[in-house]
Structure formats: structure tokens, C-alpha cells
Image (cartoon, rainbow, N blue to C red; front, side, top):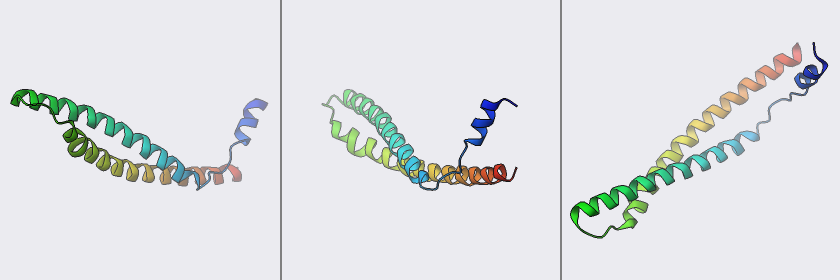
Length: 104
């Protein structure tokens, strides 16, 4: 077998539990921001459309308070739970594979 490949295989290390919260928080933060941005865009478009149909000036506070913020909070909660489950599953799988690798 190639010596460089052997060095890469041996360089793998056991997973660390303290990386789970860091990755979960990072994914949750980025996902929540993305959902807030998309919710705000759709809220602004919807507010402008409804105000144009009614013939009044659009109130953009509705887009922030009643549409984008609740969408971001709900999506953030869902993203947090899913990211936590996936990271714990990944940690346990990596831990098991690392133990098998050490045995072999």
C-alpha cells in the first residue's frame, strides 16, 4: 500500500464530543438567518402586493414582526433539533468506527 495513504489513514483521530455544540450552533445560526432572509423577502413582496391591491401605503413592520420573525424562530427551532440529532448520530458513528479502526 502507498506510504502516503497509510500516513493519512493513521492520522485520523477519535471524535471529540465538544465539537457537537459548536457545529449545532453554527448550523442553527446560519439556517435561521437564511430562513429570516427568505421570510423577509416573501413578507415584503406579500405586503407590497396586498397594499397595492388595497390602494394603501405598505407597512413594512408587518413583514418583519408578523412574517419574518415567526418564520425564523420556528425554522430555527426545527433546524436546532435536526442538527442536534444528526451531530449526535455522526459522533456515535465516528466513535464506533474509530474504535474498530484501533482494533484493526
